[in-house]
Length: 432
Image: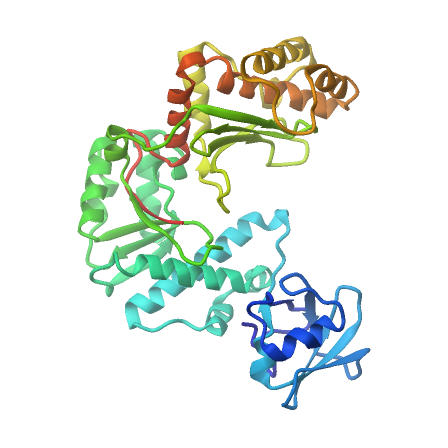
């Protein structure tokens, strides 16, 4: 809920979005429909300087007023009870892709503050208090859905935490976990998330981190952390934004999961390939998929791999690039082509790889109707697209052709990598 009536903390230009039809107060549904506004879609900006309006939207009884500007620049005077007006909108910050890192920070801070307030005081932090704690840049990107997601995450976490008071709270690699991650990188040679993807760390104030900082090998480090997690002296929490009615809690223990069976069918079901050669999905019968694509910049030729359960609202996680390159080199003698190594001289090889992919697995789903159709698209494309085709085929080929009958086993390894499960990875809590 956006408490924008007579609330100066949400200043001129602050964005709000009309709630979904299910969430809207009864008085607001018809009033906004008259002006063709769409629940859950229409966005407005708070206007603190307006004295007149292009139209008045009356929400029944009440004399409270707020002025809002729509995306076409029209100013509306909203009149009604403050509770009705506030209950009609959610906060809606800037969500451009250029703000990805900032939005991640906001989501994690919101969740951390929700957890801390509840476990330390037994009360729920109000959304206004969350907003007041954010700095100016974070305020710009804040959305109500982050607060709603954090409350669902808390509901999943509460039953697990047996002694809630006395924790410190921090984001990954800050304060007490800074030296922990430094030592983990030295001992495991893994990037932070590939060793432990926890976004928020709850650590008992009375617990000494020194043994973890001074561990001399990966087994010792992971064993100490596993012991601390078992006693709940440390709770490392990896978070996914929750858009479903409720969140799920799971304890991810790499050592146990590597030794156990995974109740998933990793047999290849289909390949999805975009006609722009921007990304692909290798989908298994279990609905686990590996997505390959380009994401760090508009001109990049570096292929990123991510695991995903098809139909889920979130990515499972990135597949360890170093592990993947080493594995395909040692197991399949395949050299990946990507980044600065892409050269148009590899075009004939890439075309032959696509032909073998189709011969072995059938035509990928999408807008490409045949091999000849794909080659025509490539030949008429610009240089960037041609190079991306070469890079993408290099990865798609090793995922779908080189493993042969071992493909389900290789996809299982990719699944473990996406979930940060490896012999050197450590235990963590996942809320998804």
